[in-house]
Length: 301
Image 1 (cartoon, rainbow, N blue to C red):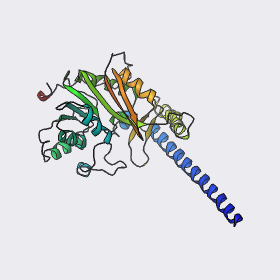
Image 2: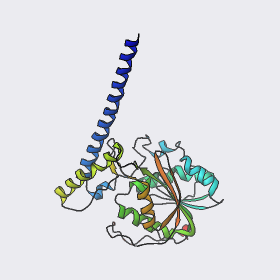
Image 3: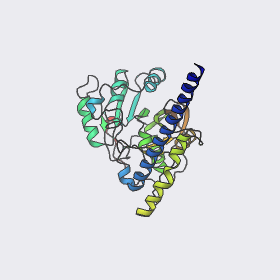
Image 4: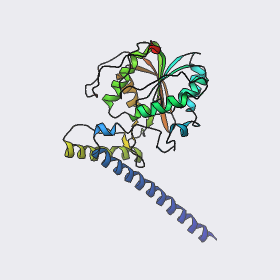
């Protein structure tokens, strides 16, 4: 009997070792796949892969399919406990209308900002059929162009991990700095984002690090341009969806450069931060150039 138990125990150990090796192999294979295609795809194309969650792993491929998806629990709890009644909220990454519908049902005045024109159009059409959301305005300027509406909002919510979908630290910090003037002086910025392991010696952290030299070698070899892939960048293997995964230190730094001071942050398998306008500091210059910001809608003034 003891010999049988011993054999079973040994087999179970081998199984666990095999499972761990299989997971490690899958992670490394995905990392190599991501690195190669981030190297092959130029920045202007890579930045277009930002339509989360439509077509991504949660299966919501259309606005109508997204209707039943609940707003993130952390947003609902925070809005219910910390935001004054009637707060004026701008939802960035408003495609699908999930956050707009939920926040309107809680009594807030809500506007949307969605850079995907087709997605914005679908969302407007859907919201027109939702009681209480018929008059919600969805702005859809060119990518990263933020309307001028100084001090128009009590809250800006960067939803659906949109900050992680912006490629390049300089572009993300510039985008944050463009959003900052839209807030009142005592306003609040809230954002969720993808995260990566804090332990740099972990297998997960290594899987992100190994993508950088492969992708950047291909970029220089093919185009000779310094459009660098950064540690934390990743391209999903199932669909061409780019996203950046943060460490705590990194998100703190980007918020500071963008002109914000963190009030609180938390995480599960993703992270979120609540911040307030802080001291603006100089930005680096490798951001995407754009035309002058569009004029604000009359409703925003």
